[in-house]
Image 1 (cartoon, protein in one colour):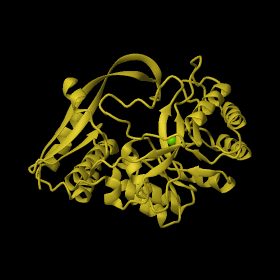
Image 2: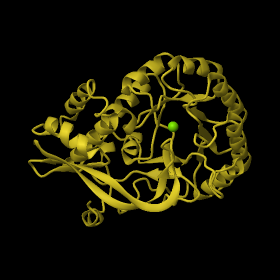
Image 3: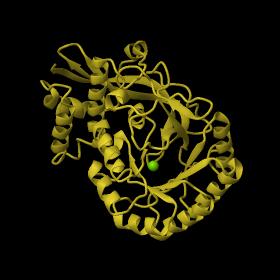
Length: 376
Ligand code: MG
């Protein structure tokens, strides 16, 4: 089987989310937006899909490399793209590698008529989810005060979530460790002792701000803290993790794929590793991190709500504790699928478990009628 075409379609939809000046998502007025769909086509008619991917980069830089390749050689293809990044990092990002790699996995699953988690070696079909909030804001009724987070945590608990993660305030809203602690304390007070709680605060606190936050969160029996400092300084995380019992989860956004995760584990910079397909360039490198962490008896917590991460979560020997579900906000109804899907890719039951799709490939139930009617 050979790849004969690689294309990216652009799809129009209406969005009720906006991004602030720092790039974080918030609810906003409904507006026109676009999504992309990467399609990899073979000479046998088998196709693989992934929502996302930069049309210009994929068609100009990736397509010439993929044409004529056997799509089942996706390890070889991933390495080819990774090596090509060295002199093209400004264009060929890990997000592009992720789109290509996930589309190849989708193609393989569809061709073999099996969901990916079974091709990887399945361990389970459902995973507990945590409610992952959007970042703090200044919206009345939104996430604008510690009390607002507490109120929203109670709503999530009533929906069935057994765990809740606060993304607290970041610029352009003022980041402040004391205000973070106040929000975390209000949430703990509201939900009681049994709900697992986590935090993902401002990513550029100083060492002492991060240590202060960590020590306060230990008093509130938090489960983990993510990325309170710039992850490029691994020594800052070694310094922090050494002083806290609170689990440090990372790295998340630091470049370097599985290599960075290996360094962090080896140097005791984290207590749990962290990986999502979008952070490291696809499912192929994500599984390398999963097996790396397993070799150190360490759990990996998955970053991001996409179905590719859920496929990996259902194929871990040392299970990641939670699927990240979100981002959630009092003004957003997460349980409505995006218009390009017929059904949610991470449906959650009343006990807080998300269930993996048994459709072949990535498992998305794609709404082809919507896509055909809304091509740009
Ligand atoms: Mg995070």
